[in-house]
Image (cartoon, rainbow, N blue to C red):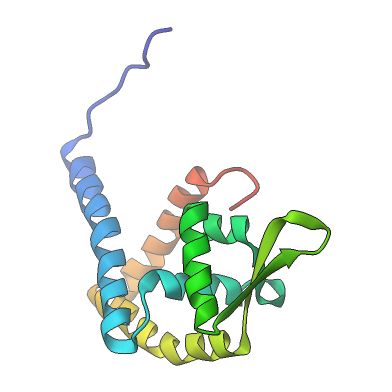
Length: 157
């Protein structure tokens, strides 16, 4: 089977691609550092708490939580165990499925998320939206959604 013919990126595409790949690395790190410095919570911890807060009954199977947070099963287990020790999350066996565990956001975890949210929001505004005009934001949202929808496995978008 022959490899498909690949066309090199043109100059504009190359600029976009390099900026996007750099943004993906730098933005996540910057927002995580901001949260750690200003609110005393790691960026990944924040994403876990946020993901649970958005789930029905503030609860997810560990495998679903790992997928939402883009973490391995072992990494999400260590993280949820650490959050459990802080009283922010409870981990328990799923009823009717002894192979699955559920992570549930506690009231304390929800309060911690609500306390941290203004810091996160201010940093997102500072790191991203303060650099864009209203017109650019209106254009960029649908563009990024279109790219993302092409990457999501069917049924998970």
